[in-house]
Length: 608
Image 1 (cartoon, rainbow, N blue to C red):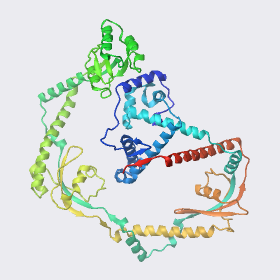
Image 2: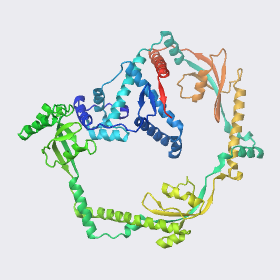
Image 3: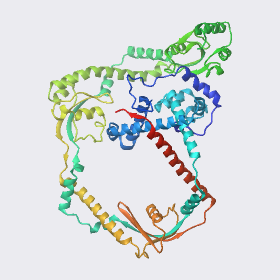
Image 4: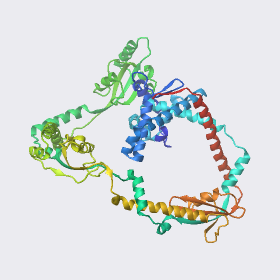
């Protein structure tokens, strides 16, 4: 997770930033991870529950990935399938097995180390310094809280230590390294001949019988979407807004509300002293408050008395007061401070007793009425249009229900009836792009009953009613409509068959390769030849005279011959690369063995 946000930028020294991170979350950011009646855990591993929270986070992430890769509709179908659930649960089970294995083998990382790492992540910084608000925002957008993020990082880093420990124990003998380096450096002389299916199309004949058979056997490919022609009417929110009357009183009232909102909107920075582990927290805090009232410096006293390890070192500073981060009692008391330097009374929370000081306040300046008037008028018209549409929506629904004719409804509301051409669910136009319109367009009462639809409330606020003019259900398209498609498919299939036969006839030992394209001394990373030619050439055995093979890539194929294998001297860098590759393969294999053993012996229960 942290890798997503990390780059090489360095910020203020870790211990300073860690203090800024710790303060809010240690004292005020404790959240519970989805408390659900009963055991809703999707699985347990050796008695340890996998949390529903982790399951939902990973499921949502996979759904987003599917939507990006396959589109929203396909992603929705896949998201509702048991396959995706099983994939997510299995992934979490594997993660739990590895995490438990890391703990069992003594690999762990402290929260302090994680916080120090977080402090150096550029995505969490402003001007090179860790910024708590930025940190929270980035985490929230990724679906994490501070606690879940840090817990995940601890697991991830412990797993990295486990993997590094196992990988570090892998080794390979010198002979294996030498052999791999020699093979990897090998060069080959080759000849090849290219074949393209398109070159055989002229020899293809497709009969009417074959076309009919293909049509009958693949009828599901030729299903047309259901489609509908509609009559519809629109009650336009924009038009109602334009007709709305805006009075001077409306403008003055709106401006007064604006002034009030500006006066109560401010950015505050605060400090606090926390007393949490004394025999009588309230009494101890009161003594601290008395010392403050007697004139002692707040920052000095915070360093001396505060039991919040994250802020005490910095004079009790918490930075910005962020809505929703602190517990309610603390947030309310801090928000009631109005003058810089003002100190609260004793504030009791679940964490102990606090004394809060307002360090700074940045109040928003109100825009003069003359400059704000145009925006206020737009807002008033929009609000009045929305209020009016609430009433109209009820009346429109009643009228549409009371008559079988959309024309009657249009006359009652003094709007025109409009008409669509054929529409399918995949039709690309502004109407069908709105899910509310699509829902009523293909609703049962419109398609089957032929009556006016329910009122559709569009995304832009418009109200729409539709009625069917014509409808065609999903059906197999006529043969004549898809004949050209079938002929093209059959032609391609047959041309590939002819090409394949020609390649097989050509790519035999003893073939005359004098007219083939020649290439000498090619390597495994050769980029001047087709990749499949290179791959085939290095898959063929070392020739006594000539080794011949072939490769097929759908509509293209190659006959390939190797005439000579050239062993070249191995450089030190070749040996180093071979060593690294073998180490990686051995490490992966060794880790897989360890993991497989742990998984097989684990007590895993998956709830259906």
